[in-house]
Image (cartoon, rainbow, N blue to C red; front, top):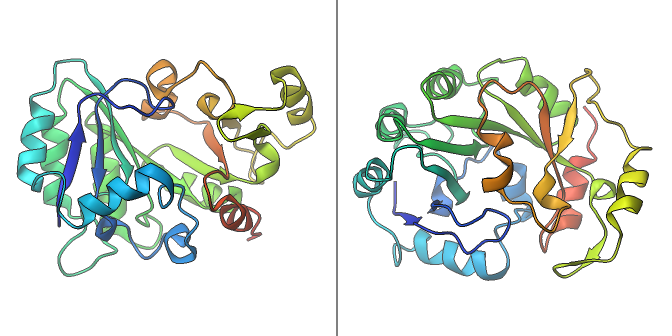
Length: 252
């Protein structure tokens, strides 16, 4: 299973000053195309260096110690599981969620506001579907990660959790480095000409932290709502955003 690191106060501006965890790369299922293509946003920059340390067990703790740390968070604490990495897999199948391990985390999260994202497949793998559904019904929000809007529609049909999706680069507010070069008004005007729903008619809401200077996960908290019907879209970003864009552009 490897180590997991829990940082009690994130230094990531887009997350906010809340607890955030990092799991090793071995937790990422083969069903994630971002892993196979090297398009993952976390696989570049300072986060990638730290992710490597956790993967090599040079940072973090064992799973049970991590769960104990989550249990020790204050009641009502908002926190994000896995700024990099995914849920714990079974020993026999790296593409199936370790349900007993997830139950431990869900129980430790009681009274807290934990949320995460997963690329484990709930469509063809019913064990994953059940594990995700159970977690969402018991206070730990797991978002299903869509590779593109077509995949997001298929995930939404499972009804086991809220859905997010990678979006093409054209949905991204233009910028250079950490600075935006496109005004917010110009960006919103440009968005008006882009689709606001998926092919199946599901409403898309672009993550506010991706285009606003003063917005973080802690401010928004939309991805922590397990009963959400809207699909949160994340424009392709990171050092390999062109590769992520290619995945987002794929047609079913």
